[in-house]
Length: 448
Image (cartoon, rainbow, N blue to C red):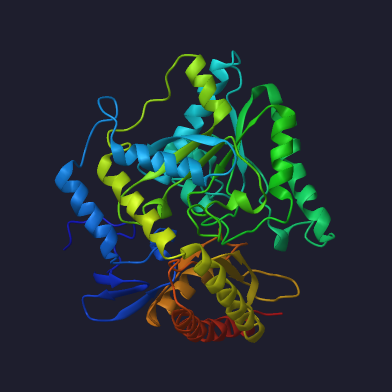
């Protein structure tokens, strides 16, 4: 019996042996296309020797330095480069070890900002009903993900309150495209007014909802309207780009697609491309200035925050992405993935609402496209489809919150080639064929 406790305690997991690019092999020799970049993290693929070499060189020099005692050259350089890549005047960077920690630190920064401004009563946070910001208690309190909140009950704060920008299942999805963004964003205005703007420290949102929704892309103008609402009510805007950041959507940060600048931006996952635990919180200049001219301190970090080994790893990832024009590849391969998924949706009537951007794509399963009725909760459509893909040697990510949102994410490493896109779609096709049969049989078995 294994001594390693796993999330699915009784499941017998395959043992991964090695990886190269978008490919993984288990110890039995079976190959898999990593169609989800693990958990949207392995952005430049597996086995990149340049990154391994940089890690080795830094580990031989100095692997750890505590931030309260030393700064270090890799962390200083990584902060500078992130500030250069981030939109607008996002200019100061604090390093953490994960996306969950980044969310927690963003909360603490927001509270401290308002204390420094002489407004300590601004302590409330508003997030979305369908969202995911991490598994630590503050981050999970922010998250509208019923499946992950269920075990913690009264320990969590009830922060989520705004519907997701989910056009497929909204009352504004049939409006003229130019009106959808403003209509969807009004929910933020209502939520802030209900809480009292004088009480609200910040709102937090993912530019594209990932794990909790399966690539829910907001309508054009939505983020701009949220930014305007926050400015009008004097509320900070936190953009959670843990999944969408570092090139996943075809820009370094998804906020760039609408040209908006959040007050605080969080990122992780693709920052290190899975080669080391690393995340970052990036602040606008006015937030940093409030700390400088106020108490002169920022919220306390963690033991491994900004360690030189992790920072050197992230620098090597950035170097690789720039040298190989990875963002250009995202644009080209993203179009191929989109075309392929839309073609598959034409063939399989239970596959609905293909949505996404760059190399972050999702869709969901329905019993009937006209009524958009989801499969019954007991059927576990997402879980069954993930297993069907697994049998075909394709790893994809289960997303959404059943029963309404039975979604999956297709988010391969950003270095995937055109030939590998074809193979991914072929394996997805075979899994969809299995799923279509299962859903058709289920529909026949349910009395009309």
